[in-house]
Amino acid sequence: MIDCLDLRRSSKPKKLNGEVTKAVYRADALPSHLPAFRLPQFPGAVQWNGWAAERLVELTGDQIEARLCWSGDPTAVPHPDPWGF
Image (cartoon, rainbow, N blue to C red; front, side, top):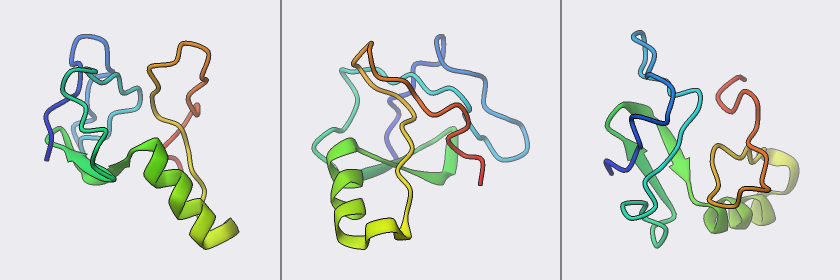
């Protein structure tokens, strides 16, 4: 569990499961060296860092879908419903 969510700029976690629809991370606390992490606010979801997600897609082909939740790059467009399956 890594507490790196910017609570002021992110959407409020849903009461039922803690889902954060719009996540904004604090760059100074983001564990980019780790392949994945969980948020205390949304412990049921695994947040994958981009390099690890790319590696998983490379290994599994079309078995999984990578959805962008957040990026420090202002030109990157996050998925409109990253947790909708």
